[in-house]
View 1: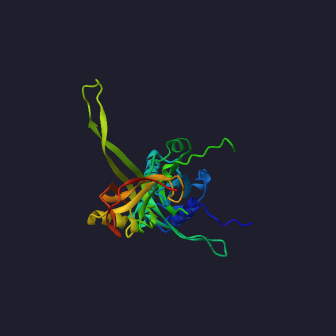
View 2: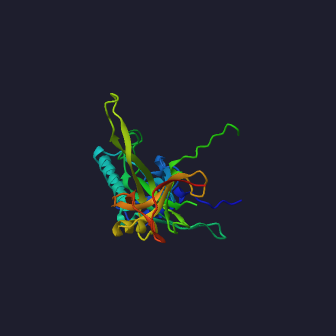
View 3: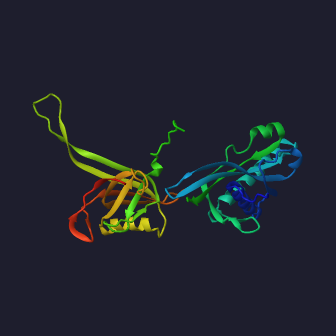
Length: 170
Length: 158
């Protein structure tokens, strides 16, 4: 039997991916969505960013509504060329600027509310359209993985975005 | 199971109601926008010490009652507007803060005509708007039966 229902983090990840794919960034980057970031060097000759769900907190807001706070990461990765030290540092700086540009783009006030499209089972709507609102702050800690850079020559950074999703209790 | 115990006194089960009907035929409308609610009751401490004992003696004076709550604020929301208007118009409304649904026997709480003494709106940068209210019992008569005071009472649902 086919299963059409989607988790809230999947719906938000899909909407965030669509938002990122509509953006323009100074460093070329390919956006995708998945459960894990891409960390295989052979796949990281150019910058890759994967939208990865991270965590969920849920609970009541008041006596009529519940909320979920879902944190989604955008895992940015690229293998760094083993050229002269100056070139490598410059590439790290460029990628750090890319990560910051991504964070600023998503956190822009005009893009803070994501529209989650309705989910259908082919017959009718099983999950209505909904909004999710970005809740500050955007977290980037650490700025990038020192271990992966040192040991694997991979730049890897994950800005985290937390979205607020509200539902009416029955 | 004979030994199963299920707690039925969660704060979340308590309800704040506004009577949107009449005193004789109440319609208890829940204020679902309420988040944390507290009922504060304290009696004045009247010193009655004398030479009969070394120990100080006290009696209880008037009981000071207040309800404080934080509500989710939404523009155009009926409960938020009604509570704000009570403050602005200096009017009282019959309300009930009770430990469970008013239709459930055994739920208990305070019923009184309340006036609103605080209606503080909060506009945090990174969260939703809320309003913090403080209610206290006031002299109250039924509009349908003027001249007869309806005093605050500890109410138990039957």
